[in-house]
Image (cartoon, rainbow, N blue to C red; front, side, top):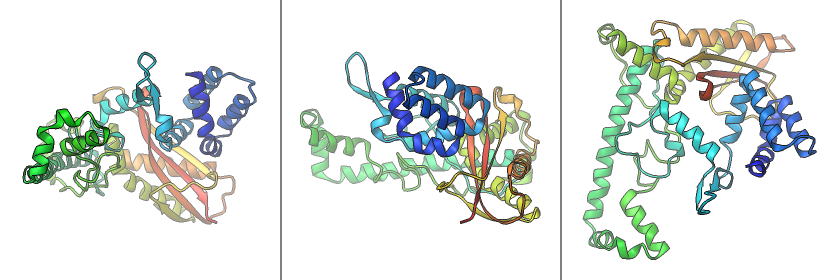
Length: 341
């Protein structure tokens, strides 16, 4: 565990060093053997708790890990398995999101709804939550139809039927085993094009609920919709464009010329960072009528401006991404400003 942690931290060094001087110092001490791997882990945990930007940096850097770093071996039988830390993080996230398509290698599990973010400019978290539910139901139906077509295509092939019928014997050879797995369970190429395993799904266009529909919701239904918007990854991804635009508007009013970037392209350290987080410790703790998006935009913009060393209005690049520390049951958004080159 200690050696694995050491290798992983060093592998992520470039990304972590650019994000946090504190993490950089921990890595320097670790490489110089002034502290042990266990001590490094302890200090990383302490720093991450004190600065949510560090936690976000660790998550973002970890997303760049290769399969070699994500895989470990079962100590009893030496068979390949996911790194226990990564596995625990996936289990934690699955409690909120349901499915995690970008981390899944097989087909969508039976009984699990797709985790589909939606494309929307709705300001109400209730409306976004209802759109998420609608998008999940629609995508699930589309996946069923898509799979039925794939199965019918297999059934139309005599060779395919023979292969499935003889799968027991075919498992003896690795190449044939892969053919059978592909035949039975499909692959990213045979998945629904808008919801493939191993890939982050694109924003889905769902129908915006009417005012009449929203006013007819029970208190519990409104709370569940709000929870889905704030507590799930797909909900926060759905709200990110609105929050990013809200931050941009406030920075523009302050005189800055802002270029928004949807996909992080960090080549230099940010000139300013900000984080807005909220607790999701209880499902009924989120008030449906609270202006989460406006509050997040206002808080991020104010903190970004306050942390800028040079206050002179100029052209800058803005990034806003979802943030989460699920072990502490807090989620939100992180904003970063970069100098335009």
